[in-house]
Length: 228
Image (cartoon, rainbow, N blue to C red):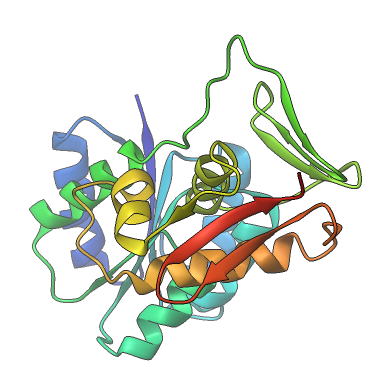
């Protein structure tokens, strides 16, 4: 059974979300503040975190940053704010999705299922490693190594990198990447692709440029370029 950690200080909202998620077949744990959430997270990493932005003591942005330092667990941000900059901040910080209050509980369950369906495009069995200079993509271990060190990536960013690396020197439009990596049920902005590419470039900043890079082809899309 997949587990969901709800981090929400408004108990009425937390109870409703928990009830709907349990009805949908999830194991649910709840926390009303950051420290409690981290304790529950560390004791048994959940399948997904529903994270409120406005929390007492430690806000959701700080908690998301700490989670991302230790795990690629999917995170959906919950907030009463419906500002585009907040959405971009959340996606840029590594959130997998973003929902504004008030929301319909059934939609939250649908978003949870959608995010959990977005599995990285890899084959764990029968394949080994891809070598791109000092960059190594270990398919069996589901890891990306740079100069021998593991690169921490969100599930979405890892999925995008693995997809692009399957087709070196081929250009993909944002729409194509949304369809292949985010999924047909994704209803957000294609700006998410740009933010994911930006995070990948930052994470791979020490990849030897003479070996390869993620290129932007203006008016066309993105390319995982490698030297021939």
